[in-house]
Amino acid sequence: EAQVTQNPRYLITVTGKKLTVTCSQNMNHEYMSWYRQDPGLGLRQIYYSMNVEVTDKGDVPEGYKVSRKEKRNFPLILESPSPNQTSLYFCASRPRDSTYEQYFGPGTRLTVT
Amino acid sequence: GENVEQHPSTLSVQEGDSAVIKCTYSDSASNYFPWYKQELGKGPQLIIDIRSNVGEKKDQRIAVTLNKTAKHFSLHITETQPEDSAVYFCAARDAGGTSYGKLTFGQGTILTVHP
Image (cartoon, rainbow over all chains, first blue to last red):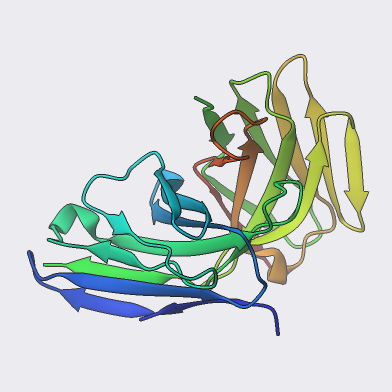
């Protein structure tokens, strides 16, 4: 089954404790992206990657890092989480050609206390 | 960059009624406008899309219209059913440049269909 998977689905952590949210897709997509969803703000792009070893900032990259060492994986790293990073996070992927549909993962709800 | 405004933020209808969600965008170069449905506990899923060379598109009970001159597009759901209850997002795609077809999303609309 073609899908985007994320882990963990739920995470509660404390300020400053480094964490990684994993994202994996099995569709051989070149383009992958991370979004955060906050009430009243919709989905905002954090980082995106056009291919292996190619990443770039989205609209809200502060406090986040990403890496793309393999085509299928695109982890999101919070080196020192803060309460304002409490949010619902989505990973997405699509083929390089942007005319194709973008597929989203099931989401990761992160709470930073 | 692109800015997408979506209204209303919440919409409550009776089963069988129609629902309309509207979005405006700022970048006249945007050329692709998808609509996503997000059910509770799940990621957004594409339900319909429209390209800038088309004015209207229908898929069963769902339709989308695009007015390029006014830079707005709308989602129409007819004969609503309780399973249509969800959060709906509109989006506009950057035409190119260095953003590689980035999608900019609206703020979302919580649709509730009452039986």
